[in-house]
Image (cartoon, rainbow, N blue to C red):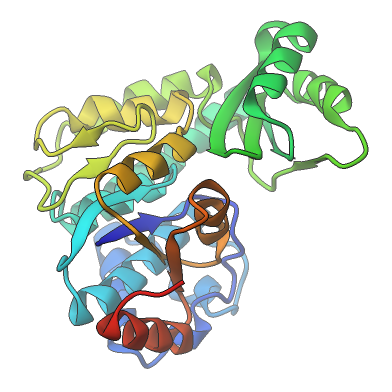
Amino acid sequence: MIALIFPGQGVPLVGAGAPWVGDPAWEAVHEVERATGVPLEGPLLGDCDDGDKQLMLFALEMVAWRRWEADHGLQHVVGIAGHSLGQLAALVASDAVALGEMACLVAERSRLTSLAAHANPGAMSVVLRWPLAHVEAVVASTAGPGCWIANDNSPEQCVIAGHPAHVAEVERGLVQPGHTVARLPIDGAFHTPFMQDAASSLARAAEHLHTSAPRVPIVLNATAACVTSRSGWPRRLGDHLVKRVEWRRSLERLSRMGAHTFVQLGPGRTLVGLVRRTLPTASTFALSPPAETDTALRVLRTGPVR
């Protein structure tokens, strides 16, 4: 019983597509380019470094999804979830929205969040080895109204976000031996009220999507709820920009749905690590470079193992 999970921003992207060149799944990049008119192949192959990061990530997730789809489809998949931007990829993988339509919404999301970040400059920092309750207490006592918990990722990892000065104040309150606080290379304070204008505009843009009922349930970032309906997605896609990413609870929900193997579709291995910290007995695979994908698919054909 398998859960498919798609990563969010923060993973290295420039040149990340090079191992996929020649694989039939690479055609997904060209589909995204045709739908949006945005060149992606150059930066994904490392020829330049000025690509649209959100579209680049989405395109690589679609490449990995196409490779998975060709071999497995949704057989044995009990649920799908995406971390932040990955939630939009999850809608495509569940057959709720066509790839081209979603690519256009991702491009609009990128534009809107860039405008919001310019209007309300923000920062995000990952916090390691502090329990969430402690981080919440430090945020409440230190930063006032300008910093929030943006992600609850695992029992020992969360992300804070907000006004850079307030985030820095919370960072100082959390830096102790044995604990780590590190700024993320992301412009803007995602999953906080700083993104409210972008969220409202994205919800309006999403009203034009042609949606279908997901073929398998999607577990939402903002609530860790399981959704099987074709309706309500404009509001949900807006909400996910301003509400906390409840990733730990989402993984726990997928586990309760029967998933014991979690497959990350997209670059990096960040989500694999979060699964292992949250669900130590789960099996995990990362389908990103084709060589790793081939190995993972062979193993999964004969039965998932850790």
